[in-house]
Length: 72
Image 1: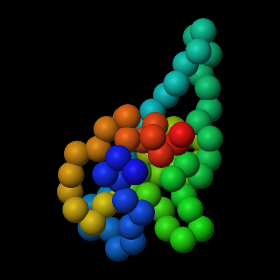
Image 2 (image 1 turned 90 degrees about the horizontal axis):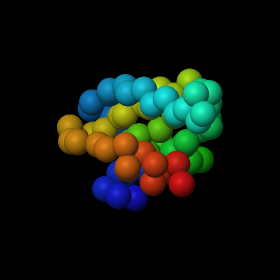
Image 3 (image 1 turned 180 degrees about the vertical axis):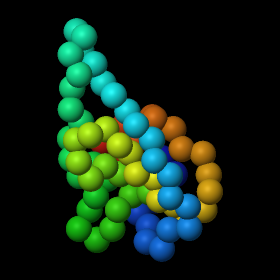
C-alpha cells in the first residue's frame, strides 16, 4: 500500500504524532490503524492518542499521505 509494507523484524523504530481538529475540537483517531491479524504495516496506531508507530526493516521516508492510505 503506497510502498508501506506489512512487515516483521524491524530494524528502525520511530514515532510521530498526528492531531486532527474540526471546528476547533480535537478528534480522536481510531485505534488499530494498520494492524492486521497476520502482521502490522510499517506505519500503524495501537490506540486513539494520535501516536503513529513507524517500525521498518529499512530506513526510508514516510509521508502523512501514506498513513492516510492505510487508515482508509
